[in-house]
Amino acid sequence: MPHSLRITEIFHSLQGESRTVGLPTVFVRLTGCPLRCRWCDTAYAFKGGERMTLEEILDKVASYNTPRVCVTGGEPLAQSDCLILLKRLIERGYEVSLETSGSMDVSEVDAAVIKVIDLKPPGSLEAEANRYENLDALMPADQVKFVIADEIDYEWAKKKLFEYALQERCEVLFSPVAGEMNPQWLAEAILRDGLDVRFQVQLHKLLWGDQKGV
Image (cartoon, rainbow, N blue to C red; front, side):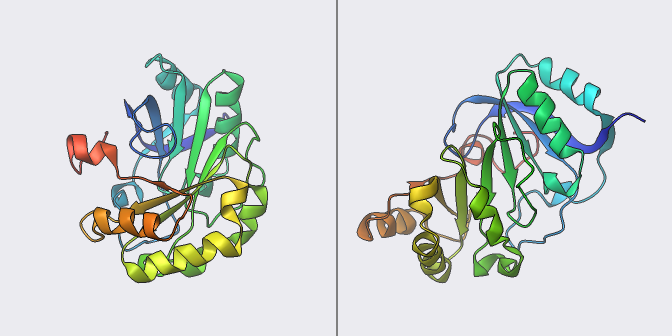
C-alpha cells in the first residue's frame, strides 16, 4: 500500500513568517493536531482533509514550479509518513521547512530540513506540551518561534531564551498574537532589553487578511 497523508490544503503564496518571509513558497498543510492553542488560526486543519499519496502530493507541489516548500499543519509530525514526505522533497531538490508545534519528536526529521519549532508560552494554554528535548536537535539553520500574547508571555519567552541559550543555537523569532499583543510594544521591548531576536508579524495577514489558502 503506498504511503499517504491526510492533507487540508496545498497552495502557492508568499511566506508570511520566518527567515524566508516574502519569498514565493508552496505550502503543504497536513490535517490534525493534538494541541488546542488558544490563539490558533488554523483550527480548520484539525479534522477533515483529503487522503493523498506521496506521489500525488509531490506532483501537486511540482505544478507550482517554486523551489521552496513549507510543510505545516495542524501538526504535520502527528502523521508518521510526514517524515517520508520531507525526505522525498529534499531528494527532489527543494528548500524545505517544517513548521511544528514543538510537542512532537523532531530527532528523525531529515537533517537538510529547516525546522521552525514553536515554544508555547503560558498564554497559549499549551505550555505543558513543550518538548524541550527537541532543542538538542537544533541546527544553526533552524528557528525557534515564540508567539506572544501579553507581557507575561514575553517575560516567559525571554527566560527560555537565556535558559536554553537559544541565541547561540539558531535564529529566534518573536511574533505578536494578532489582535491581542500590540506589535509596537513587542518591538520596543525587544530593543529595550537588547534581545538578538527577529521580530516578525504575519505578512500574509497584512496582505490578504485572515483567510485560507494564503
